[in-house]
Image 1 (cartoon, rainbow, N blue to C red):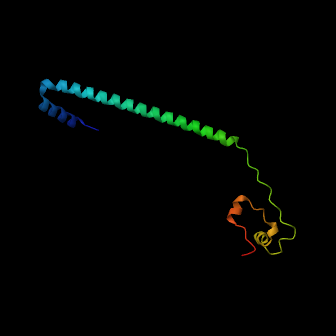
Image 2: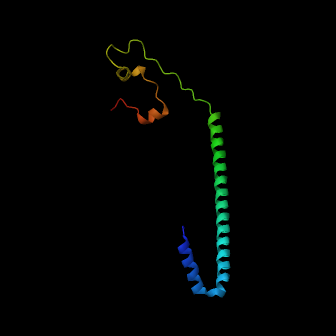
Length: 125
């Protein structure tokens, strides 16, 4: 709030007319007390809010370091070596994917995941 000198004079004269010269100092003291109490409560609220934010940041840092420790302790998973294609399976001009599809013996053995996707086919069908 940016009040100039004319606005301040107008407010003082208006308060003087409304409250009178006897009550004006008492009203000014009450307004000053109210402003001080409001400022104090505002500062306490601000300090409490900042304290809670710092606590949350500290907890987040703890959790982040715990996750880093857990991830750092994991051993790298070693994948089994790929099954090589038999010699002569890839004809000239064909791609590796065509060779894998065309040569059933060159496919990798089925795991439990691929077995559920590809149900066994019976000779009856």
